[in-house]
Structure formats: structure tokens, C-alpha cells
Length: 486
Image (cartoon, rainbow, N blue to C red; front, side):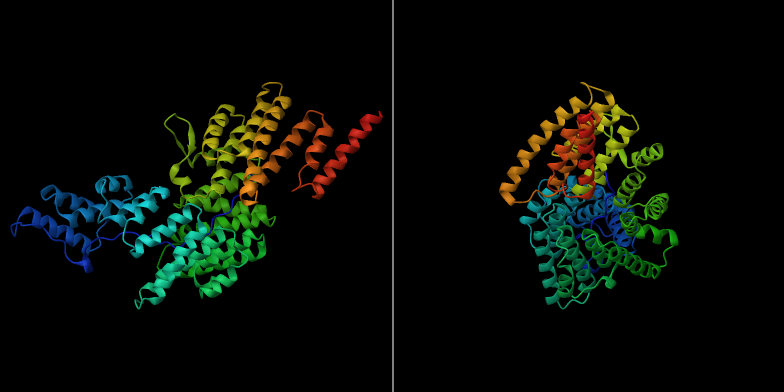
């Protein structure tokens, strides 16, 4: 499988809840004596929040109060927000219970952070349209691939910000603009992006996210030099901003990891593979906390190496896996939540290919089951299975693999025909079908069936006119003709 590019980068805000204290008023207890234990504990909690104590400390102090007075709504809310900031999202949902009234934002936020995006939308639908919830709706729509709807939500938020006289919303507006641009890039509406950015009155130089997203647009258009230029701009803008925060060089490099991973992808696409591998190796040595950067960077390093250094590639790849209940290794849910469908497909495929080329056939077959579970219609999974048949020499090798793949291709062609009847576009599935047909042609050549190989290649409308395919067909037919003469 090929290298995988990073997705467009959105703003950091996701409508996160805040503690109900400080400027919003003091926490209040019930009818308690002036110096009762509950009063002392409540004061300690208020003091911890006011002085910026850690979320773990706030959680512990909220628990202490609730042990004495379990029915204090403000304290329960403090505990809820502390659980969210401690990333204990399941515990937060358990505390909310079946009735999220009064905690709609916290409820939707916990679902979002757990990757349960389908549940976020109905949770928001019955709640008041407060800014945090509206932003969460846009983020959930984006994650679900409903980009046009996400754009509509983000632009409505921008309109609301422009009407507001609150000057503190300017930073929030910049993040929303980055989200709008990211949604346009993710939906592949990149040709009109300059006009969109002009309408939004934003430019790549204004923030790391905007420059990064502009680079992603050039990546989609395969304009590699422009993509590299904008990624270098994004990294400069980010570094200038981070240096003002007195971060260490290690902390700055950690923040720049997404940009470096994308830049390595562009360098590889330009043919500067050695430079791309060197950059990826440097990023991965630092072990970035950003799981998406770690996963995509690992995948791209493995793909750039190809069949070289398989042992090290396999060891690196297994670092982003987790052991499932059945004992098999698979991609972790926390990683999958941060990747889009195309990226997930690439990682599943490369995991299977690594096991295949390392002759770990049992692990390959186990990973193949997970691959099919997550990417049900993937023809690449069928190609891996065909390769396993060849490696294990099951059912007469190439003939069995060809019989299996021809059945899979026929079923996929019927499915694609149905898709064309609905929306007139085969999309990426059609490209995967072409790749499978190339594999079938390779099998035919391995079996000495040159005529069938040539017929398969000529029957690829997407590829038949490419020089490599034309040359291969000519060579196959030439050698087939020589055998016929002799």
C-alpha cells in the first residue's frame, strides 16, 4: 500500500465544558453549619478551582464533598467536568445517567471524545443551541464525513461571531475558519478554496492550521512544490508562536509533528524518498503523543521502505497495535478514532502486508479478519487473501487464487453498477477494482497465461492508455506470438 497523507487540520476547540465556578459564582452548599466538615471541604474545592489546581485534585476534593453532601448539583457538575478533563469519559457518562438534562454539553462532549459520533447528533438535537453544542455538532458531522453539513454549521457559527460585540470571540472565529477550510479540503472541494479563504478574510500566514490546510489542498491537487512551500510556512508560523510560550525545543518539536509527517509525505511524492524517510525517523524517535501523527508516520515509514527492513518495520507497526480480547493484535480504537476511512484502510492493509511478507501467515489471516470487519467492501483484503493462497499453495496456487478473485471482482462490479445508478460516480472503489484486476493479470502471467493477462490489462479503462500498461500488453502479446510461431 502507498503512503498516507495527514487529514486537514481543524481548530483545537470542541466546545469543551468548564467548571461552574470562578466568574460564574461560588459553589454553594445546603443548610450546613458554618464550620461543618462539609463547609470546610466545599471551601477547599472552591480554593482548588480558583487557584488552578490539577483536575485530579479537583476531582478528589469534589468526591470528598459529595461523600458528606451527595445532593449538591454544583459540586456534581464540578466532578463531571473534572472527569472529562481527566479523560474518564465512560465514568462521566455513568455520572450523568439516563437523564442528561442540565448536562447536555457535557453529555455530548463525552460521547464525542469516545468516538461515538452517531450518538452526538441526537444528544444535541433536543438540547438548547448554546455555542459549545453547536460547535460539537459541526465537529461530529465532520468526523462522520458529512462535510457539507459541517461547513453550514461552521459558517453559521461565524455569522453569529461577527454579529457579537464580544471581542474575545476573535480567537474562536479563527479556529472556526480553520474548520471551514478543513471541511472544504476533506470533501475534495479544493479548486475553489482560494475564493473561500478570501470570503472568510483569512490567509495561510494567519495560523498554522490555515497554512497546513492550504498545503493539504495542494496535496489533493498533486501540486507538490506548492504543498511543500505551504507546509514550511505552517511550520514557521507554528514555531514563531510556540517560542513565545517559552516551550522547550522538545515540546516545540512535539507540537510540530503533524506538519513534519505531512512534509515527509510530500517529499516522498516528489521523489525525495531518502529525505522523507529521514524526517519520519526523526519524528518517530521523539515518540509524539499525538496518536494520529504516530500512526500515519509509522505507516508511511513502513510503506516508503517497502520490502526492506521488514523486521524493524513490523516491530514499529506493532507499537501502534493493542491486544484484543481474543489475544490477537489489532489497531487500537483510540488510534482509529483519529483517522479517516482512507487512512484506516491503509493501516489495516499495511499491517496484513507486513505479516504476509514476513511469512507470519497465521497473524496475517487473523489481521485479515479485522481488516474485513472494519472495511467490509475492500478488494485489497481479497488481494491479500489471494496472496495467502499463493504463499500457502492452497488449492493449486494461482488457479485457486484466480477463481477466488474473479468471483470477488464480479460481485464488486455488480455493487459498483448499483452505485453508478444512484450517484453516477464509482469513486475510490473503482480505483481499487482496477488494482485488483492488475493483480489478476499478474497471477495470469505467473500461470503462463499471457493471453488472459493481456485481456485483463486491456479491459481496464482507467489504465489501458497508460504507457506502462500499453508496453506490458505489447510485450506479453509479442512473446505470446513468438511461442505460437515456434
